Length: 266
Image 1 (cartoon, helix red, strand yellow):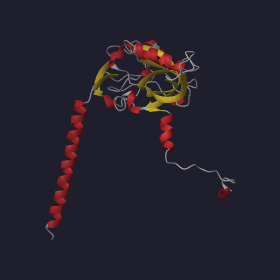
Image 2 (tube, rainbow, N blue to C red; image 1 turned 90 degrees about the vertical axis):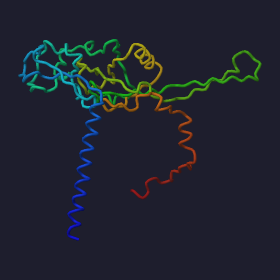
Image 3 (cartoon, one colour; image 1 turned 45 degrees about the vertical axis):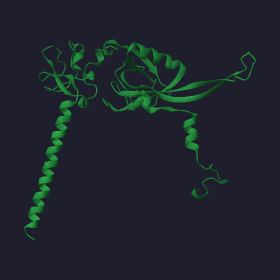
Image 4 (cartoon, helix red, strand yellow; image 1 turned 45 degrees about the horizontal axis):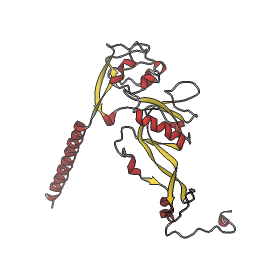
């Protein structure tokens, strides 16, 4: 019996070791296959008010899922040259957009081949909490028209055409990066705006559709996790309409309000 206990302990420790090694190998394989992004880091220790030049900055390739918020991408390193740091930065630390936000223009943040447009949302509550470089989905609520023609009517005065209107909600754009937020101070790289308007960068055709959607529908932002590769197909969410609520009500008994509500809680 005494010899069995050490044997059991050895087996358990062996299984634990195999699990740890397997997990490390799996995570390494996942990291190796994940796309890598080049970001700007300090080439040496930098003091506050040091000017950023070619010799003070370099790049580091990191997994896409590990890209920090507001970090300056290497493809945009030109925005940093000539700027002065507001604080000290250690060697290999990231250079962030907030480090150069005072001298960065809205046009500088526009992606190559894209257009930057303002988007005003119906409910500004979430916009107050947004920060530049956050990712959002844009939900559209609009009036859908259903045209029905009565083929049995011979009159050609249009009375045979019946138009029914109903409200529908669907995903317009599943993932959009916020490059700026409109506020009263004229600074687009700060959060806390009460205007309900953000700036986004989109390919020209998508930008035109979003401009038209602001006129035809009510738009609502939904916060996403940055660099999340899930739910990027706008059709996955389907559409919410009268049929959706009809199915929700199906099989439910009518609720009744008593003559004295909250009687037992007074």
